[in-house]
Picture (cartoon, helix red, strand yellow):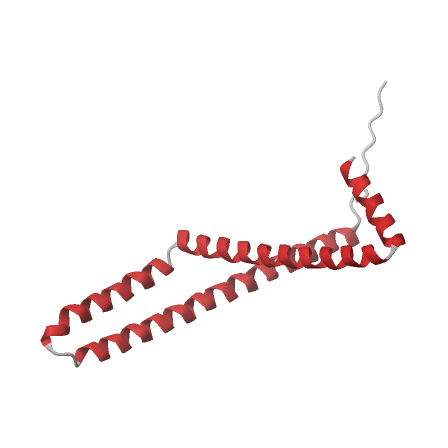
Length: 140
């Protein structure tokens, strides 16, 4: 004969569940604030570009008819450039360039710190021994 056991007690601790829910809500709030910040930056860029277009239009409106073609070329070039700034591939490219630049800056700072440590190790035998052990461990 078999016996089945039905447990009616909770298998999850309510405190742990609350902690996970609070963490999920915190991450959602961080993501929402980051998205709002990004959207506001692009909105400011759009306002600046619209003001620039209006300024170019006002400046070119006073030109004589001989320069009207140049004025329209400048105005449309600025308009197409502003549209290009809002496309997703350009945004991704800008972010990749920004990330690459930050990584390059970080690598330069790391190289400078390594050089300072190496110069200090040339003067201190204990530090040189520590560096030698670390490099041996890294090569294994």
